Each structure stands twice: as C-alpha cells, then as structure tokens.
Length: 347
Figure 1 (cartoon, rainbow, N blue to C red):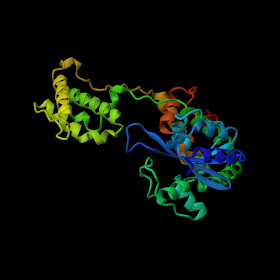
Figure 2: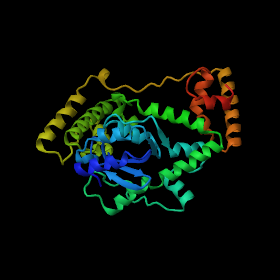
Figure 3: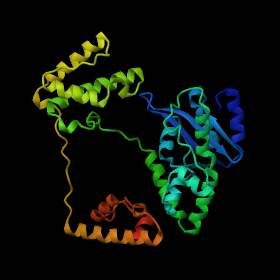
Figure 4: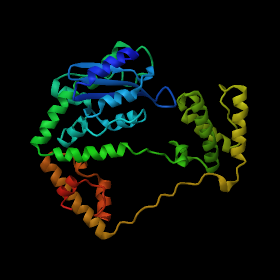
C-alpha cells in the first residue's frame, strides 16, 4: 500500500505512462460520524496498487496525474462524489462498466455477477462492511479491495465493443455525462426531515418535539466525538424516550455521565415546555392532479417504452422510469429524458 511520500512520488511517475486507469474507493461511514475516504484502489494495465488517503499524502498530485486519462469505474456515482470532496478530481473521461452493462441489457449489474459471468471467477464479499479506516489492513481486506479493480479494464473493453456493435455508444455517452453532472451537485437534506426517523409518525406532536430535541443532542454528541449516531443513542431508544416523555416519564440513558445526564434532562424539560403551536407539524405532501389528457399520454408513452424495451432486450426502466414518463406526460418539453430516450419514445 502506498503511504510513504518517497514511494508516492515513484508511484505517480509510473502511473503517468498509462492512458487508462481503473479506480475504486473504500470509505468509512459505519465507525465514525464524518465519512472518510480510507482507500483508493488503482489498476493500471500492468499492476494493482492501493493508495492510503489517511497517510496525509497530497491527493492533488494524484488527481493531476490522472488528467487526460480514461478512468474506469464500476458504478462511479458514489466514488466520484467521495473523491471530489478531496480536491479537483478529473471527471471528463469516465467509463462506468455498470452503466455500460445496463445499456447492453445485462440482467445482473453487480461487479461480482459480471466477473463470474465473463471470467468464471467468484469474488468474495467477506470484507464488504469491514472497517476500512483500520491499519494495517488484513490480507482478506487487501484481496477484496484489489479485486474491485482487477477486472475493470477487461470489462470496459468487452462492454465498449458491445455498445458499438449494438449502436448504443452514443446512449452511453449521454447517460454517462448526465451521471457526472449529477455527482457535481451537492445534496443537502432538509433539517426538518432529518429527525423524522422510521417510526416517528405513530407518535404525538409532543413526542415529536422531544424526538427532535433528542435527535439534535445526539447529532451534536456524535459530531464532537466523531462516533456514528447509533453509538451515542439508537433510533429505538430515541423513540422510546420521546414517547415516554410525552406521557410524563423522563427516560435518561444510564450510560451518560452526570454532566450529560443533567444536560439531557434539561433538553427534555425544554421540549416538554414548548408551546403546542411550536411543536413540529405533520408534513403535508401536495399532490399534482393528473388530467385525462396527461393520463392518456402517459399510457401511450408507457406502451412505446415497453415495446422498445422488449425489442432491444432492455429493462424498461433503462429507457424511462415511471416517474420520468409521468413528468414528460405533464410537460413534453421537459428535460427529464435524454435525446436517445426521446428518440425511442418518439417525442
């Protein structure tokens, strides 16, 4: 694993001579609050290597070396978002083998399934949920990580050839570019939705006030300690505390320190004293009424989609999802579909 500055410089020099590099990443979001990029797997045509982002190496030098090269990923969406947090990652020439497989009509899109089909090799999934922030990595973890890039060059060649044979390479480029644009957008969750965990809807509005307060406390404690939220307090515990508090019984976790217990009780007291009108309100979803004409157009589009999918050997959702068809039925000039999808649907 590349973690030493002197080895890093040599590694970048070797990488510079290749025009295509396979990449994958491993992160840790299960053992900490702030998601960390823990490992970058790199496959050149002649070697497989691991790069340690936790060693303090300047990733900007690595990203600079990748400029102008074709970068092969399998399911690039998450990897691109993760890598972009560490600097200006070059994303202008990406080949995503999962996207290519989808457009070629492959029924099973996971890397393990594709490797087994094309290379008759079964990949182990034993380290999928391992702690990638630990050092040193076990032998099993190293093997698992390297296998994520071991077959990507060959898979890319297989699917690129097939896309050309099927005359779908332009479909790939359009779909790939849309995916890349989407990964450049920062997803921001509404704060009012964050505390509404599974099971909250069955509680009273007073319980919601307690749940919101406890959730904010847990989030603060989790941030300060860089521990996962469930390590501080589980969701089921929070629901129990909120429900019990609304019924007049303050439940304070026994594992808290005396200082934490005092603060926790104060938080509960404040939430219980909140005026009724300041307690959280139900989320009211506004639905869009569908006209008869829109419904008829939706059915026609769906029939065209299903027919085209059957003829082309594709999952219908590859051509257009139900939501995309509904959106187009309301506004045929909308941009929810790519040019190749519009051509198939004759719109």
